Length: 291
Image 1: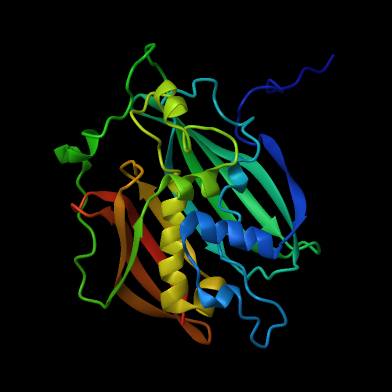
Image 2: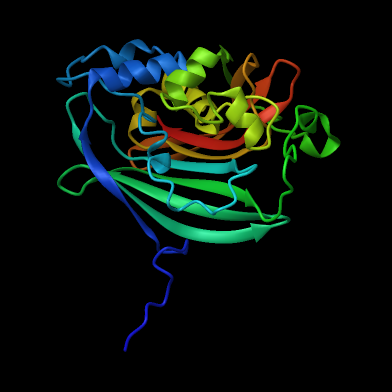
């Protein structure tokens, strides 16, 4: 008798989380705009391409549509890192297919990390974009513990130096986070990204603004600065280093580091980060786009 190598209900590298097929609509773009307040005119202008382009990270939370890849201990789980590769723009009316797979698992300090890769393709199989989400889960928690409080971000080990290069400074994109944005971005169901009571039950003192929202702010800056060069070859690799709370005022910046030849074009590499009004960094990392 042959036995399965993995527990079919377990979480392991290679776990197929499935996907879906859907058609991009104007309503999807409007919901994205409500959740991010990113209303770039390019999302409404078809130009000569036949249909308006959709935000590059329109499927920002596709990885969270099916949480069967999560570990059982949900208390204090956090979005830790995010990577994105963009190969081709989405347009309103396009049909796309998504597929999600657990591709890595590792341990750091008192946390288990799972990495879920989402591949989005055209119906003919053409790759449109690929993303990897690193989600962390506490290995041990006590009942009623506050896992992350609002003073954590002030600690010396939560400071991050970035953007010291001599290239052009890009930005800022500025946002004040509201509960209405959280509900549009992370709703409509109650969860710890939209509801304070549920956030406290998960070990947080307040609503935790979904990490993907700030990642979308980075994409907004790259779209504004590079346009088609972001939609046709953008890359992003960032760490989410501090929690964002409702009413936080955020500023997104990028600092050009260098530009290298890439085929008939060139690729601009930047340091990119998101910070609060008092300078606390919430995301740090790198991005690039074509020129």
